[in-house]
Image (cartoon, rainbow, N blue to C red):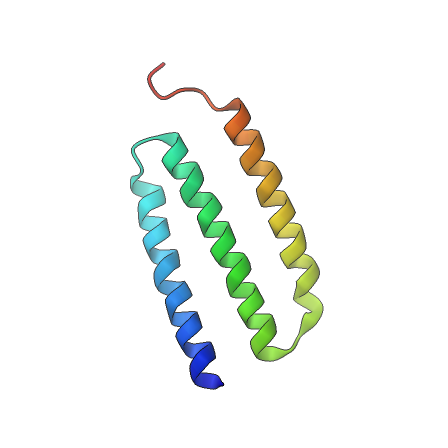
Length: 86
């Protein structure tokens, strides 16, 4: 099982680095918003992998809170964002 945790951690790390690159380079604010949403989703997945690997369930409320805050934040930014061409 340790190999599975190591592989999933490595894949999530690579995905996080690629998403950070895309978020920093994104030509529009909407690209950056999608990149940050994806980054938060991958952090939630990383925390879930950590919970599954260690069996420590004290992080689960933090995962739920982070998911809800991320959802509300992305809805707010998408609603009130200014167009890039203005």
